[in-house]
Image (cartoon, rainbow over all chains, first blue to last red; front, side, top):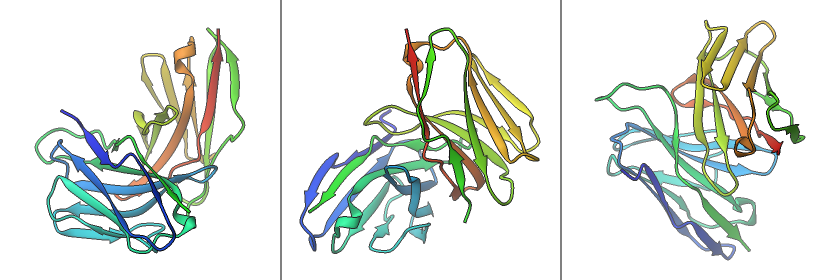
Length: 116
Length: 111
């Protein structure tokens, strides 16, 4: 039971390049989230999903796109990376229909992205 | 939007003492308030959840209080140990997609 797995763990991009971060969870969770964490800013929600095939904008969605084609996967895309997107990105999941829930978020270990 | 305030200065305490961390929020009270622990280079890990109608919640050496009048939650670690050194995040929760995270307080427990 791996929990929430993020790939890649580290990536360096040049301005204007594109990339995709992959998040996979094996807990049969319905909800999945992408956050970014910057020094002194706390975690900020980028996009989230309440189920397969659905996505919604969070607090800071501009410059990012997401897709949830399979329940266990949530992809975060940067179409044209900018230096302001240098950050640590965390994926999280929560809520299972077939077991009791505490309301907690389960986080991955993070993906550290640097845009030059 | 909601503003969450946690002391940005590190809290340094001696082993065996009680650590108390503060979380203040603005505007309306959340239905739940969660606390997470984050170690360097790792993702946050859930510790405790307290509901709006609960004054206090305990789990082993951890205690959380929730005062909706003061718009504040306190997080206590009793008999602190060096292994408790980490950054602690509070996260008021309004519904399934509305968690507002504070920037965290770093706790240093010295032997």
